[in-house]
Image 1: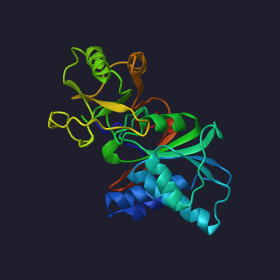
Image 2: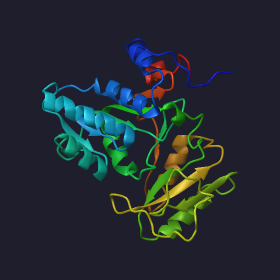
Image 3: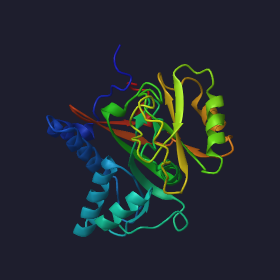
Image 4: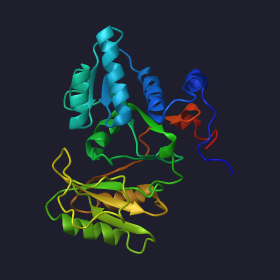
Length: 278
């Protein structure tokens, strides 16, 4: 049985796919980012993503502004990192108070399932990312094919939950109770010295300095050996009902389309195409 993500490249991406053959994963990410930036038009309010893949898009937007190909662009950063990177690229910044509706957001993701649901926030920026991308008319996601999973949590890596520092241990216990009895489930407070992409089972318990988000909150990382089974929306609601939980890293139904960088090129998945191949 074939991969649930197998799609034929869209006609508009075929040239990029042919050109991308033999290039590195970062080269492919850059090609995908450039493709996403083709959607940007002068006068737009943009959501500016966080991470190594989004960096290519920010740099390209800055190039187009300096060259005069784009004008009157403003961007809303999804993290302090994105704000600094965008400012260095020459992208004027704004916020959701001034622009509560965002025309287009471009960002990466940590996982993508067949329904285009996402896990985001392993870099710690999930709350601002969800606020900006949830306010967007269009949200385009850029990933490489290692981020495609059969179900959220299927990589075995962290699903982050942002929590307030006050009473964090109680919040962690309530999160544990929510998934009590789930085979292969584990969780722990993220620490400043821990890489969220590492396994929860190899981290040192002695590393107790908490990781602090841009919003001065903590993160509890949830791990599932075989991913999350069940109704994702119901699980989302259960998480958000826990007092002390600010937000979680499941982005359900927010992505408009996903541009996937693969070893053999770049393909486009969107909501309209979901029934035609995965």
